[in-house]
Length: 375
Image 1: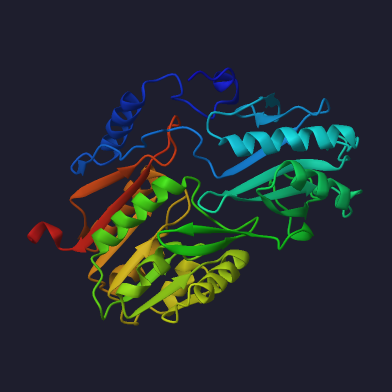
Image 2 (image 1 turned 60 degrees about the vertical axis):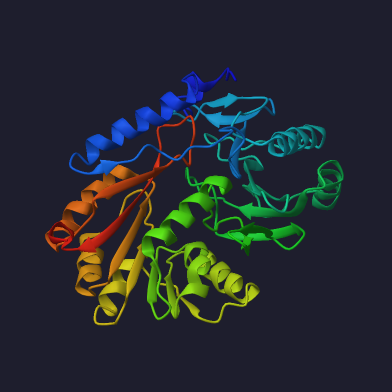
């Protein structure tokens, strides 16, 4: 498959490369970060296209939608994107038509005026449900009822439409206020046999198929025991912890994002899990407060910036049997590994999952054990 805008938008650095060559290159690049470890070739996809379940686009004054050119605010229009599924591409075209027909104004950053700033689409892949988020510069969306009726008529997978209000002069996409224009304000997806509510701002892995493979590997490495107390840090909406809750005594989830925290609690109730408990706290501060608690295993899936030295110190002081570290940026993971090694937690292997085909990004996972060199 060929993409006509890849060199302009800069999102898919490897789109013109054979897929197996992409996987090999990613392995080689990450091997440089972990020179004394066995770095496995990434687990790839049978069909590495149409995998993104979250899409954010901006519009220009011609009602063309697209992605920002790398390191700029210039929109690169596209008609279809190879990383979006057919339903997402179809919904975007319908929204474009409705914006144009209703003469909705497009936000002008320089003048700080105009209604439409961004459109965010979240797809629940297993259930074929779609959440459409209209990011607006105003508090009122004119003709919202008719807009939603026309959108849902043309796109039956759309189960909810949310207006997100962002009136700040910022590059951050989402504001803090939302109005539900249609539906319940969320969609429900299935992952690893459980169901999850996904709202506009909650964290959910971009690639559903690869996410299930990653979580199965994480649980395999964790090797949970019946009486284990597992700490799931940076837990988002609770997906990893809930996936293993039935195999252990107790799971404790820690998440700083308030909306994701609420989603996690609702997800636990929806899946009838009574042995998982969530805390809306910064992960590092939580670790420091509970440094003397008994924990058998720790899961950590921090943001791209990685963890903190204080978190790592507290995690090691807890003396868990194992620590499973998942990362979307192997460079910060390699940095953090050096701190773990100071406390005698180390790993032998690095496992890779191609969560983002055609891009330079790779998800990596480590199993950390104490005094591994003496085993």
